[in-house]
Image (cartoon, rainbow, N blue to C red; front, side, top):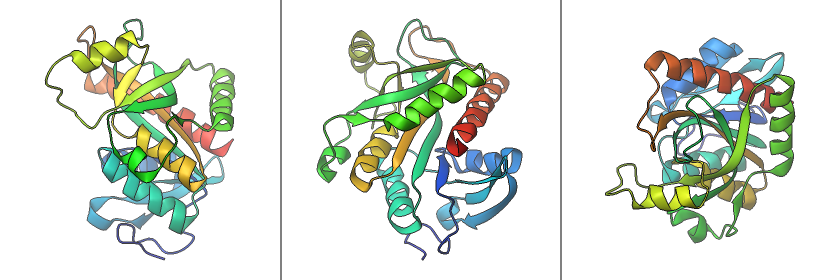
Length: 233
């Protein structure tokens, strides 16, 4: 039944779901990648869709920006709509000096400055569902797509006051920074669904390099196609 933030009826979402941050990216996934996609919710402009990919039902629902927003949609999808596999698909800023732009990264774990996971009682270690990561590795290898795995930093702060956080995380081997994975992995542990977060590297915070708009879209599309194959595997 509809929730305070999702207006879809029961059964509107497939068991497997892709979760970008941006509602416009969700709409593009539905339009460009999914067959027979239907709009199932649009509360507050957060447009969710269900269609098929290679004949298998798949849904897409945006998270909005940041841990608190993502946690709302993730919780409602898991508790009220029975979504059992959520794959975050986003972009990230590079922390690891040797990591190249356009590289696709899958997060094995997330470290965060957000208080939300601890407040909910999530485990101290926020980690991927191992079976889903294994699937991602196999699918990427079969498709001859480079996939780097490692720890990401989920930050509540987009405009950091200085470089201290980046320098500390780079020194610790953290690959990149984004804003939602800690919520996904915390709630996967608490609600009992499978979770994976994937990113295209679009901005290099060590070298200062950035992808053009065209390069960004091409890189994201490659990651989206890979994520869809993982979702139905």
